[in-house]
Length: 248
Image 1: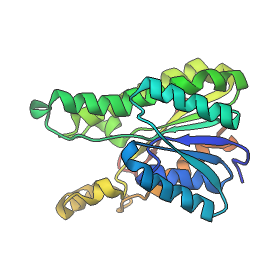
Image 2: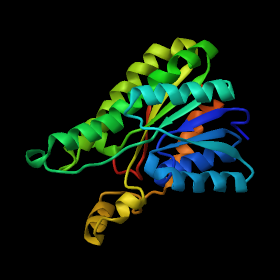
Image 3: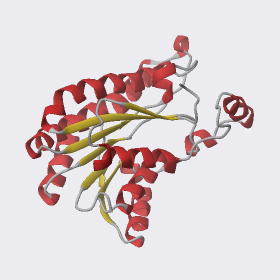
Image 4: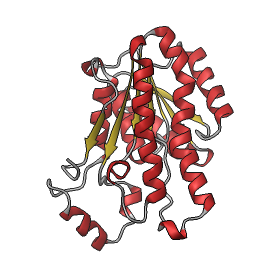
């Protein structure tokens, strides 16, 4: 029970990687606040039920990470009810893929507002209470695409690369108060999003992975758990790749 007595908030925690992270943190004793959009409440409730069935505890907290006022309100509610937020996992994200010449303003706005601004909004909201408590771990779920780029994903890559710069800057600002900020960059992970890809595309992707297999959400969650726990107490400002060797 490495996280006994801790409160963790996971954005986009209703499915995929976010779901796996929520379950993993709860399994180690954390009270997990599962964020989702209004449309994801039912799926988030399923995750919460699974957490409770395994002996854990948590709650569902729907709000849009791109809405700073909604974020501030939700974070304040959690802090007042639970006494603080010790772990923040910025996982909420969308991908609107398009070649740059065909990309639309609304696709850029939606992606940056969710992926990058959402990370900024949530991090800013917990910074002051974490600094006051002199304890905290912020973990940003970026992407291997933010490190290496990918044709047809310029918007997504820009948002995820921005998260890496934000991670390192926050880490430098908050380190003196024992608040750590790190990023995890998943590679090709089996999720609902990747399941929609044609098999030919998956086969081509596998050729670029030295370990010869796609990763799982649970493998990403394991890295997040380590960064959330005291086992990584001297680690901040780092980017941890979970990609099977796809990027070295």
